[in-house]
Amino acid sequence: MLKNYLTLAIRNLLKRKLYSFINIFGLAIGVAVCLVILKYVDFELSYDSFHKKAGQIYRTTSTSYRNGELRGTGVLSGYAQGPVLLADVPEIKSYIRTHPMYGGAVMSFKREVGDPTTFHEDHIQWVDSTFLDVFTYTAIQGDLNTALDKPNSVVISKKTADRYFSKNEDPLGKIMQVAGGWSDGDYEVTAIIEDVPQNSHFSFDFLLPTHNLLRNGQYTNDDGWGWNNFITYIELHPHADVKKVEAKLPALIDKYRGKDLAESNSKNVWTLQPIRDIHLNPGLEYESSPTVSTNTIYFFIIISIFILAIAWINYINLSTARAMERAREVGIKKSVGAYRSQLISQFIFESVLVNFIGVVIAVVIAIGLLPVLGEIVGKDFSFDFTDPRFWMILTTLFLVGSFISGAYPALVLSSFNTVEVLKGKSEKIIKGFSLRKALVVFQFASSLILIAGTFAIYRQMVFMRSQDKGLTMERMLIVNGPSVLEQKGAQDRLISLKNELKKIPGVINVATSGAIPGGGYNWGTGIRRDGTDSEQSKTGSIV
Image (cartoon, rainbow, N blue to C red):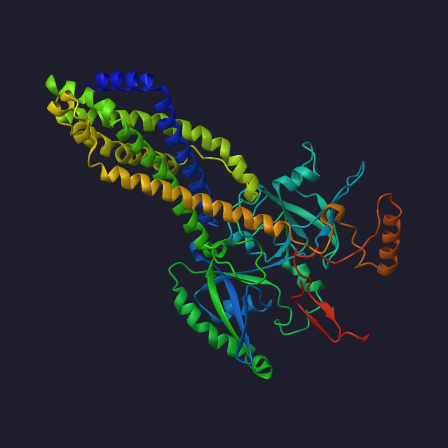
């Protein structure tokens, strides 16, 4: 029986090639776009899930008020917060403080023979020695349990090791020099890890122990709260109740910060944010990486459903539109004794075959579309064919698509009256296809909504890109210059650098800054009133 169904299905597909092409590629494009969108959604929802202790790791956030007015919610904290939480809250197993090296530093490896390998690096993080005990990264060389125990140790990523060391050089034990910031000096490579996964909110190429940062920092004599641009993570004991932990935080704030806050008529509220929720909670100040709204994720899911529905409805409408052509076939088969259940099985089988071919082509199209998506969002995407979830999703789309797109046409076509069909009374046959009319309306309405939405977003992007940015972007070049601000005679060296750059043909003017506008903020930036010469105050949140 199945062999007969397969023979009839193939014969019908080959007999009506244009119709078959539209059906198959309509389904294929719909399923392909759905797969690509679901891949993006799955990627966004998977952030930081690779950490084995992800369910126990939380990041502290702080909401500040002054004079009863909300000032904002951010992720920065004083370096004393972690030790205080560990000492006063029994449910906390450990803490980790991280601090980026703002502005980067010059890293170099000097060989005994030959020129040194030197780069300006931006992805450098100071972390506590417990960092690699709590967060999960894959070691290529070295022991991650002890890699950060020594004050002058450094852990580097695989791509960094490949950049500084040749294949014949073993990076372990080699000395790398850091120039810039508060931790100039020699550091021994104690471990190499696999590159940080793309679905991580925390990215780095170098890990340096916080010990040297605190030892060399300018706020080491305060009470631990004045230097407050650290990010603090905590690890809870298994089965600890995070709500009970948060309930203890107001008392800690009052104990350690109450007096200072009262003097400035301020108030702080600490909360614990699950690490897996960090990427999906936008709006916090000083985030270490871009975030995305859950509403955006839901929006993409809805779009994928609409596109898939349009593809399935297109198949249904095309199948029922050919009702008159298939009606004679149905009438003849019924007249020679075919049961309605057999006709339904035949049409369902045709739908299964079309959907199967469409899904196979959809996978090929989706593989071709992933690099385009990756270029748009700045990530490298690929399907993991060893992941059972991929095959489960693909199978679900195939089975649901086969049933939805095949059931209604099969019921309609198999319901034709034999006598009326053979007499050619087509009016009664096609009359009453109200559901098909509703599906056509839904298909066109959904298509118009998607097209209008796409056009609106495109126009908005064009509008934003065409606005005056206050500088001529195509004529400006940003160069990471040498670190001169921490050296003796910095002002003279900086002026000399600018003068040399101006001598280059084609250079009209040169300006310097501590950071790229829009790329972050400088800690401890001086502020003075207009018209005065003396610095009035300092702040830690200047962009």
